Image (cartoon, rainbow, N blue to C red; front, side):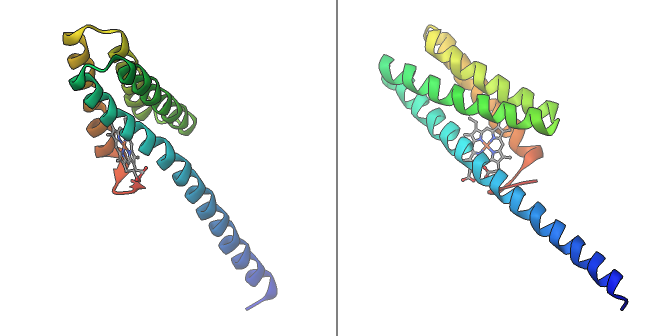
Length: 129
Ligand code: HEC
């Protein structure tokens, strides 16, 4: 094989490797947000059931922050539908803190709906689709 072709092949492999590393770093960062958002969602539900105002406030902020970061991630990727699910999740998480009891239940339902809405098109276990 001519040397030039070998070096082109080598460059292609090198580029692929760089791409994989970048994607893994992306995924690791994403999982940090996703885990924080999921944990805060669970804690928020428990806090609403327990009528624990301090815990409601705390986990509302945590969930909203996580989904806000996730919204920016998808905005950067140009995925408007995923961005919308994340923004809806963020806004619903925020709304729980200021709502009355009926409003809290409605906001928690809205928040839960965003999980499956986004997972179906974009999640493959612990990876992106
Ligand atoms: C905008 C899209 C989106 C929304 C909204 C969303 N998820 Fe995810 N989720 C993903 C993607 C993509 C993955 C796969 C990558 C990963 O594992 O983090 C994932 C992974 C997860 C994981 C596995 C994390 C891990 O350890 O890898 C959990 C748990 C999770 N989501 C819970 C939730 C819950 C609970 C909600 C709703 C309150 C939610 N998600 C809302 C996109 C979303």
